[in-house]
Image (cartoon, rainbow, N blue to C red):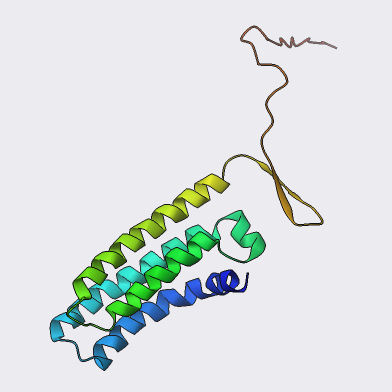
Length: 160
């Protein structure tokens, strides 16, 4: 639970720290000037993508209730963040494959965040119990409605 809670708290700062790391990595590891152009293009993309996915994850009821992300979120965010950190090293021997992996992980992260949000947003009733939260599936109507069930209300007029 501690790691899941840590990631919950880390998601918003990560949106600012990871693009900053790309710039710091460019300086520290002495990448070429063309890499700086890549940093200026990718930095805002990482920032916006991280904020969008963070908002999708934090919109889930279970995440808000537990103040912790799911284990799937931990795995995908962890892998994506490690790939971004690896990109900031700017080692030409493996930079392009890591860039491809980073893009694939970012798309998978968005897809899974949307899927989890939509799965939790299905109509149901959430009850608070002593042990925690419990979800009750929606109930079916007692009898199917018929097109012949019509209620007519007539208005009567009283003139005084």
